[in-house]
Image (cartoon, rainbow, N blue to C red; front, side):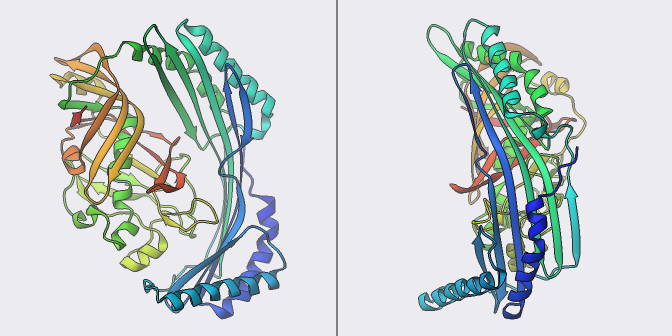
Length: 474
């Protein structure tokens, strides 16, 4: 089923083109990003149900202009009389320039964006459009999952299911470009809370992708698995801190990819000399087995798109090849300042926010090893599962990953002993250079959001195959 482009934006295209025409005599470059994002969020448990708008819903516009080495932007959410709007925008931009002059603010001198003539319409397809199911039908199916989870074991004290359906429509216009895209993504989770005489534990499983209502079937098929995983946490031990041979599941591999080569290779950080990775371009920073890609075209995840929020077409960038750091990723303005081509990674939290270099799909590529081969090769170590959270320090390349559990391996076999929680820490090049085996099958998870520092939240996805390496656990 095709996700048709927004009727609202389609009707407004002529007015927005007229606005560009009116602004063009005053500026060397003019572009407009128009957004129409609509979605809903459902939360169901054994005790309550709630339905609300998706947090990222938005309808608005941002105008970017260039004059005398300086870019400026104005955003608005109501398309009024175009002539009055053009004058209002010029007045606001002049106030920005006056403020910079009065405060003697130093600005980065940036070249003008040069664009090729491009016209594009992308309307992605899903198996079942979300609107084919009413809100009541969705709630009913989520409730059935909760009842099944609660009835599965006597130690289950709560079961929860959540579901977001989002329809994204974006249009980018300039004197050279007319780009339109429409796609639906879904993100969901099921959570089991279990309790015994002394403790309470919980575990979850996430689901996501450029999918519609078909994601509900995926959720229904994993209810018992999530409860079993949570029950297992009631009998775990604490890991003895130390360095071990480790195997990471695809979701943990993705977390490492995101934290190790996420913000550290966002090249707006290179402009400010805030990323250690800048010094390692062209140098070995990982095992020769390691290949990592980044870009909206790498996977059909919640972070995939046809063009970014600056009108740059989506890309598939090889960041690491044969263990050597090849390049980073860049938004359009950072690329101009660095003298390189933009990679299609200019993303905004909303039309009201600045575009930054942001991750999309950050993924380890697969090789030839099997999980069985990896386990058989370990004398003593752990198979790490379950992504909780992660942190990185781009300036010093430190990494910390919070994981749900580790399965002990001794003499080439799983012992049945499970440790939890597990914290994986280290220096990024040390961790990546220790990789000695890489699995075949790559999986990508897109349930997460990523902030720039402590704000500017956007969708991000990551993944990879099973990896064997050495890591410090605690």
